[in-house]
Image (cartoon, rainbow, N blue to C red; front, side, top):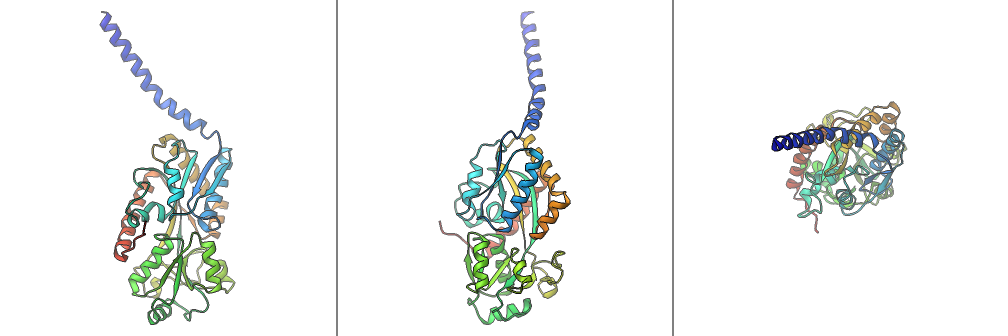
Length: 328
Protein backbone atom coordinates (compact mmCIF):
# COMPACT_ATOMS: atom_id res chain seq x y z
CA UNK A 1 0.00 0.00 0.00
CA UNK A 2 2.84 2.36 0.86
CA UNK A 3 4.53 1.54 -2.46
CA UNK A 4 1.29 2.29 -4.33
CA UNK A 5 0.94 5.63 -2.56
CA UNK A 6 4.55 6.60 -3.34
CA UNK A 7 4.10 5.65 -7.00
CA UNK A 8 0.98 7.78 -7.22
CA UNK A 9 2.77 10.70 -5.55
CA UNK A 10 5.72 10.49 -7.95
CA UNK A 11 3.32 10.38 -10.88
CA UNK A 12 1.53 13.47 -9.60
CA UNK A 13 4.84 15.35 -9.14
CA UNK A 14 5.93 14.48 -12.70
CA UNK A 15 2.58 15.57 -14.09
CA UNK A 16 2.74 18.89 -12.27
CA UNK A 17 6.35 19.42 -13.40
CA UNK A 18 5.54 18.70 -17.03
CA UNK A 19 2.54 20.96 -16.86
CA UNK A 20 4.69 23.82 -15.59
CA UNK A 21 7.10 23.75 -18.55
CA UNK A 22 4.88 25.64 -21.01
CA UNK A 23 3.92 28.07 -18.26
CA UNK A 24 7.61 28.80 -17.54
CA UNK A 25 8.57 29.23 -21.17
CA UNK A 26 5.58 31.43 -21.80
CA UNK A 27 6.58 33.55 -18.81
CA UNK A 28 10.09 33.92 -20.27
CA UNK A 29 8.68 35.28 -23.50
CA UNK A 30 6.42 37.67 -21.59
CA UNK A 31 9.25 39.13 -19.49
CA UNK A 32 11.95 39.27 -22.19
CA UNK A 33 13.68 41.68 -22.81
CA UNK A 34 14.51 43.33 -19.52
CA UNK A 35 17.74 45.04 -20.61
CA UNK A 36 19.32 46.36 -23.85
CA UNK A 37 19.66 44.03 -26.83
CA UNK A 38 22.61 44.12 -29.23
CA UNK A 39 22.55 43.37 -32.96
CA UNK A 40 26.08 42.62 -34.15
CA UNK A 41 26.80 43.61 -37.75
CA UNK A 42 30.03 41.90 -38.91
CA UNK A 43 30.85 44.80 -41.25
CA UNK A 44 32.20 48.31 -40.84
CA UNK A 45 29.69 51.08 -40.22
CA UNK A 46 28.36 53.13 -43.10
CA UNK A 47 27.14 50.53 -45.58
CA UNK A 48 23.57 49.67 -46.48
CA UNK A 49 23.54 46.50 -44.35
CA UNK A 50 24.49 48.65 -41.37
CA UNK A 51 21.72 51.09 -42.32
CA UNK A 52 19.11 48.33 -42.43
CA UNK A 53 20.25 47.11 -39.01
CA UNK A 54 19.78 50.59 -37.55
CA UNK A 55 16.30 50.99 -39.02
CA UNK A 56 15.33 47.59 -37.63
CA UNK A 57 16.86 48.42 -34.24
CA UNK A 58 14.76 51.58 -33.97
CA UNK A 59 11.57 49.67 -34.73
CA UNK A 60 12.35 46.89 -32.27
CA UNK A 61 13.34 49.32 -29.51
CA UNK A 62 9.96 50.99 -29.84
CA UNK A 63 8.18 47.64 -29.46
CA UNK A 64 10.35 46.29 -26.65
CA UNK A 65 10.82 49.43 -24.59
CA UNK A 66 14.57 48.87 -24.25
CA UNK A 67 17.58 50.10 -26.20
CA UNK A 68 18.57 48.02 -29.21
CA UNK A 69 22.21 48.71 -30.00
CA UNK A 70 23.90 48.08 -33.34
CA UNK A 71 27.49 46.93 -32.83
CA UNK A 72 29.85 46.89 -35.81
CA UNK A 73 32.47 44.16 -35.42
CA UNK A 74 34.16 43.91 -38.79
CA UNK A 75 37.18 41.93 -39.86
CA UNK A 76 38.21 38.42 -40.75
CA UNK A 77 35.77 38.16 -43.66
CA UNK A 78 32.83 38.77 -41.29
CA UNK A 79 34.12 35.99 -39.03
CA UNK A 80 35.01 38.13 -36.01
CA UNK A 81 31.56 39.58 -35.37
CA UNK A 82 29.72 36.40 -36.33
CA UNK A 83 31.85 34.23 -34.04
CA UNK A 84 31.32 36.66 -31.16
CA UNK A 85 27.58 35.99 -31.36
CA UNK A 86 28.06 32.22 -31.70
CA UNK A 87 29.92 32.26 -28.38
CA UNK A 88 27.46 34.57 -26.59
CA UNK A 89 24.88 33.41 -24.05
CA UNK A 90 21.76 32.06 -25.72
CA UNK A 91 19.43 34.46 -23.94
CA UNK A 92 18.31 36.69 -26.82
CA UNK A 93 20.34 39.71 -25.76
CA UNK A 94 23.05 39.29 -28.42
CA UNK A 95 21.91 38.74 -32.00
CA UNK A 96 23.77 38.54 -35.31
CA UNK A 97 22.97 40.07 -38.66
CA UNK A 98 23.62 37.30 -41.16
CA UNK A 99 25.23 38.01 -44.51
CA UNK A 100 25.90 35.86 -47.57
CA UNK A 101 29.55 35.89 -46.45
CA UNK A 102 29.04 34.85 -42.84
CA UNK A 103 26.14 32.44 -43.17
CA UNK A 104 26.66 30.88 -46.60
CA UNK A 105 30.05 31.48 -48.25
CA UNK A 106 32.62 31.18 -45.48
CA UNK A 107 32.25 27.41 -44.97
CA UNK A 108 33.32 26.95 -48.61
CA UNK A 109 36.10 29.55 -48.49
CA UNK A 110 37.97 28.41 -45.37
CA UNK A 111 39.33 25.04 -44.32
CA UNK A 112 38.52 25.93 -40.72
CA UNK A 113 36.04 28.28 -39.13
CA UNK A 114 35.63 29.03 -35.40
CA UNK A 115 31.88 28.54 -35.83
CA UNK A 116 29.58 26.12 -37.65
CA UNK A 117 26.81 27.85 -39.61
CA UNK A 118 24.41 24.92 -39.20
CA UNK A 119 25.06 24.07 -35.54
CA UNK A 120 26.10 27.25 -33.74
CA UNK A 121 23.17 29.54 -34.58
CA UNK A 122 19.43 29.75 -34.22
CA UNK A 123 17.84 31.22 -37.33
CA UNK A 124 15.23 33.86 -36.51
CA UNK A 125 14.09 35.58 -39.72
CA UNK A 126 15.02 36.70 -43.20
CA UNK A 127 15.18 40.48 -42.92
CA UNK A 128 15.50 41.82 -46.45
CA UNK A 129 16.58 41.11 -50.00
CA UNK A 130 18.19 43.43 -52.52
CA UNK A 131 19.13 43.54 -56.18
CA UNK A 132 22.76 44.07 -57.19
CA UNK A 133 23.71 46.69 -59.79
CA UNK A 134 26.73 46.76 -62.09
CA UNK A 135 28.25 50.21 -61.54
CA UNK A 136 31.35 51.64 -63.21
CA UNK A 137 33.49 54.76 -63.10
CA UNK A 138 32.80 57.20 -65.98
CA UNK A 139 36.25 56.43 -67.42
CA UNK A 140 35.01 52.98 -68.46
CA UNK A 141 33.90 53.41 -72.13
CA UNK A 142 30.67 51.44 -71.92
CA UNK A 143 27.03 52.51 -71.98
CA UNK A 144 25.50 49.07 -71.41
CA UNK A 145 26.32 45.54 -70.30
CA UNK A 146 27.41 44.19 -73.68
CA UNK A 147 29.77 47.12 -74.29
CA UNK A 148 31.23 46.56 -70.84
CA UNK A 149 31.81 42.86 -71.54
CA UNK A 150 33.47 43.68 -74.86
CA UNK A 151 35.78 46.25 -73.24
CA UNK A 152 36.69 43.92 -70.36
CA UNK A 153 37.51 41.10 -72.79
CA UNK A 154 39.73 43.42 -74.79
CA UNK A 155 41.50 44.53 -71.59
CA UNK A 156 41.93 41.45 -69.37
CA UNK A 157 42.81 42.21 -65.73
CA UNK A 158 43.03 45.95 -66.40
CA UNK A 159 39.75 46.67 -64.64
CA UNK A 160 39.61 46.39 -60.83
CA UNK A 161 36.38 45.59 -59.01
CA UNK A 162 35.50 46.20 -55.38
CA UNK A 163 33.78 43.97 -52.87
CA UNK A 164 33.26 43.84 -49.12
CA UNK A 165 35.45 40.75 -48.90
CA UNK A 166 35.91 37.27 -50.31
CA UNK A 167 32.58 35.50 -50.56
CA UNK A 168 30.56 38.68 -50.02
CA UNK A 169 27.42 39.09 -52.10
CA UNK A 170 29.19 41.71 -54.24
CA UNK A 171 32.19 39.43 -54.83
CA UNK A 172 29.98 36.44 -55.69
CA UNK A 173 27.83 38.50 -58.05
CA UNK A 174 30.94 39.66 -59.91
CA UNK A 175 32.30 36.10 -59.90
CA UNK A 176 29.09 34.93 -61.55
CA UNK A 177 29.54 37.60 -64.21
CA UNK A 178 33.14 36.59 -64.91
CA UNK A 179 32.28 32.88 -64.99
CA UNK A 180 29.36 33.47 -67.33
CA UNK A 181 31.15 35.80 -69.77
CA UNK A 182 34.82 34.80 -69.51
CA UNK A 183 36.04 38.30 -68.64
CA UNK A 184 38.95 38.79 -66.23
CA UNK A 185 39.18 41.56 -63.64
CA UNK A 186 41.26 42.21 -60.53
CA UNK A 187 39.48 41.74 -57.19
CA UNK A 188 40.06 44.42 -54.53
CA UNK A 189 38.35 43.49 -51.23
CA UNK A 190 37.42 46.17 -48.67
CA UNK A 191 36.19 45.94 -45.09
CA UNK A 192 33.10 47.94 -46.03
CA UNK A 193 31.59 49.66 -49.05
CA UNK A 194 32.21 53.13 -47.60
CA UNK A 195 35.93 52.99 -48.43
CA UNK A 196 35.23 51.18 -51.71
CA UNK A 197 32.90 53.92 -52.91
CA UNK A 198 35.57 56.56 -52.23
CA UNK A 199 38.02 54.66 -54.44
CA UNK A 200 35.36 54.04 -57.07
CA UNK A 201 34.54 57.74 -57.26
CA UNK A 202 38.22 58.62 -57.59
CA UNK A 203 38.81 56.03 -60.31
CA UNK A 204 41.30 54.02 -58.26
CA UNK A 205 38.99 51.12 -58.98
CA UNK A 206 36.60 51.07 -61.91
CA UNK A 207 33.90 48.49 -61.21
CA UNK A 208 31.55 47.45 -58.42
CA UNK A 209 28.54 45.19 -58.31
CA UNK A 210 26.75 46.58 -55.33
CA UNK A 211 23.65 48.31 -54.01
CA UNK A 212 25.02 51.40 -52.24
CA UNK A 213 26.01 53.72 -55.10
CA UNK A 214 22.67 54.76 -56.62
CA UNK A 215 22.93 58.29 -55.20
CA UNK A 216 26.24 58.78 -57.01
CA UNK A 217 24.71 57.30 -60.17
CA UNK A 218 21.88 59.83 -60.02
CA UNK A 219 24.43 62.63 -59.59
CA UNK A 220 26.25 61.47 -62.71
CA UNK A 221 29.41 60.57 -60.82
CA UNK A 222 29.06 56.85 -61.65
CA UNK A 223 27.29 54.82 -64.34
CA UNK A 224 24.88 51.94 -63.70
CA UNK A 225 24.96 49.49 -66.61
CA UNK A 226 22.39 46.99 -65.38
CA UNK A 227 20.79 45.09 -62.53
CA UNK A 228 21.77 41.44 -62.14
CA UNK A 229 18.28 39.98 -62.33
CA UNK A 230 15.61 38.69 -64.70
CA UNK A 231 13.62 41.92 -64.55
CA UNK A 232 14.12 45.55 -63.69
CA UNK A 233 14.08 46.61 -60.06
CA UNK A 234 10.96 48.59 -59.22
CA UNK A 235 12.94 51.24 -57.34
CA UNK A 236 15.20 51.96 -60.34
CA UNK A 237 13.01 51.34 -63.40
CA UNK A 238 15.39 53.11 -65.79
CA UNK A 239 18.20 50.62 -65.22
CA UNK A 240 17.86 47.60 -67.58
CA UNK A 241 18.10 44.05 -66.29
CA UNK A 242 20.85 41.63 -67.23
CA UNK A 243 18.21 39.38 -68.80
CA UNK A 244 17.12 42.00 -71.31
CA UNK A 245 20.79 42.64 -72.13
CA UNK A 246 21.60 39.07 -73.08
CA UNK A 247 22.32 37.32 -69.75
CA UNK A 248 19.01 35.70 -68.79
CA UNK A 249 20.52 33.12 -66.44
CA UNK A 250 22.54 35.52 -64.28
CA UNK A 251 20.40 36.43 -61.29
CA UNK A 252 22.45 37.69 -58.36
CA UNK A 253 21.02 39.42 -55.32
CA UNK A 254 21.95 39.94 -51.72
CA UNK A 255 20.09 39.35 -48.45
CA UNK A 256 20.24 39.96 -44.72
CA UNK A 257 19.06 37.64 -41.96
CA UNK A 258 18.93 37.60 -38.16
CA UNK A 259 20.31 34.88 -35.90
CA UNK A 260 20.85 34.10 -32.25
CA UNK A 261 23.31 31.65 -30.71
CA UNK A 262 22.48 27.95 -30.76
CA UNK A 263 20.13 27.01 -27.93
CA UNK A 264 18.11 30.22 -28.06
CA UNK A 265 14.82 29.29 -26.35
CA UNK A 266 12.05 28.75 -28.88
CA UNK A 267 9.69 31.16 -27.14
CA UNK A 268 12.22 34.00 -27.31
CA UNK A 269 13.04 33.14 -30.93
CA UNK A 270 9.35 33.22 -31.80
CA UNK A 271 8.81 36.52 -30.00
CA UNK A 272 11.71 38.15 -31.84
CA UNK A 273 10.45 36.71 -35.12
CA UNK A 274 6.92 38.01 -34.55
CA UNK A 275 8.19 41.47 -33.62
CA UNK A 276 10.51 41.59 -36.65
CA UNK A 277 7.60 40.73 -38.93
CA UNK A 278 5.52 43.44 -37.27
CA UNK A 279 8.28 46.04 -37.72
CA UNK A 280 8.93 45.05 -41.35
CA UNK A 281 5.23 45.39 -42.17
CA UNK A 282 5.14 49.07 -41.20
CA UNK A 283 4.88 51.34 -44.28
CA UNK A 284 7.39 53.83 -42.88
CA UNK A 285 9.96 51.09 -42.22
CA UNK A 286 9.46 49.69 -45.71
CA UNK A 287 9.88 53.15 -47.22
CA UNK A 288 13.15 53.76 -45.36
CA UNK A 289 14.55 50.38 -46.36
CA UNK A 290 13.57 50.90 -49.99
CA UNK A 291 15.64 54.09 -50.06
CA UNK A 292 18.61 51.78 -49.34
CA UNK A 293 17.39 49.43 -52.10
CA UNK A 294 16.42 46.68 -49.66
CA UNK A 295 12.99 45.05 -49.81
CA UNK A 296 11.64 43.87 -46.41
CA UNK A 297 11.24 40.09 -46.28
CA UNK A 298 10.14 38.46 -43.00
CA UNK A 299 8.53 35.06 -42.66
CA UNK A 300 9.08 32.23 -40.19
CA UNK A 301 12.29 30.81 -38.78
CA UNK A 302 11.60 27.55 -40.65
CA UNK A 303 11.35 29.48 -43.92
CA UNK A 304 14.71 31.09 -43.20
CA UNK A 305 16.31 27.68 -42.63
CA UNK A 306 14.94 26.42 -45.96
CA UNK A 307 16.14 29.56 -47.75
CA UNK A 308 19.64 29.25 -46.29
CA UNK A 309 19.92 25.63 -47.39
CA UNK A 310 19.24 26.60 -51.01
CA UNK A 311 21.57 29.61 -50.87
CA UNK A 312 24.44 27.56 -49.46
CA UNK A 313 24.12 25.01 -52.25
CA UNK A 314 24.11 27.73 -54.93
CA UNK A 315 26.97 29.70 -53.42
CA UNK A 316 29.05 26.62 -52.79
CA UNK A 317 28.89 25.81 -56.50
CA UNK A 318 29.95 29.33 -57.53
CA UNK A 319 32.94 29.13 -55.19
CA UNK A 320 33.87 25.62 -56.41
CA UNK A 321 33.75 26.61 -60.10
CA UNK A 322 35.76 29.76 -59.40
CA UNK A 323 38.25 27.83 -57.24
CA UNK A 324 38.03 30.60 -54.67
CA UNK A 325 39.92 30.01 -51.42
CA UNK A 326 41.04 32.30 -48.61
CA UNK A 327 44.47 31.79 -47.09
CA UNK A 328 44.44 31.30 -43.30
